[in-house]
Image 1 (cartoon, rainbow, N blue to C red):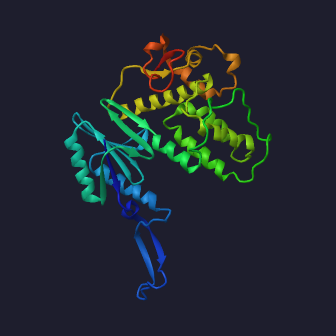
Image 2 (cartoon, rainbow, N blue to C red; image 1 turned 180 degrees about the horizontal axis):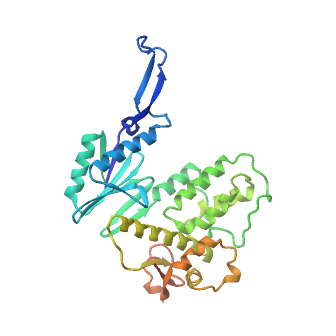
Image 3 (cartoon, one colour; image 1 turned 45 degrees about the vertical axis):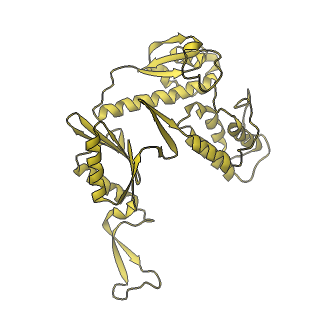
Length: 335
């Protein structure tokens, strides 16, 4: 995977409409007191759309097509060769199964736009990419460390559990806090962190409900999340919600790959280390104790195709590097 960056991307956009600009004081040209802008400029609301239209047209001219499930993902097929490009404003990632074709595309892009070649993909949108053989790891270690430093929590004493057992947060209980900006920044940072840690979705979703009516217990709960040393959660509900997000992403990725001509005929395997969440995904047991879970989280239950399979602890490979091996490791297969 290769990473490139467009320099001054928005300046490449072309305007269809006429945009008039008043000249800055000290730089007036009396012959042309009002200039008509024909190229995009940073700060104009049309600039992002003009840039997207420009790069979209150019990629189409190279033979790429935009994928139906993600309009910023482009694919180029040349026989059995394929190149994929994903865009995020002025950042670009290229990958494919033919290195020479990738290098040729990079040459075309560099000849049309002023670009910076960043080489192999290692860090993109605060996500670290680490390749280990055929495995690709998505990490946010630096992002987590930066959060602790930014919020002055790096030296706080850690807590043994992520959230107090039986904790109930209410909008009208506790001392009201007048300035919610700090709280919102913390919660927003944690929401982005759940991109690679969906098992945190439950507790982060819980504290994100009080952005407008902030009270002391809400802030204490957020601070506790940052103080938890391993940032993991093993409750049935949290694991179940994490399974839902993983299942949705897996199904979307399958459709996305199919859209670019890569078919995946095998069943998707979703791993969980919580027996209760695995059983909840397979049948309706625990119904009396899980009625509060929103209906859309039961999406994973609808997608379970193959019955769950129980493995002894010694066979669970994914927990060995993160925690003491207690309990069991379970697998649920979904379509």
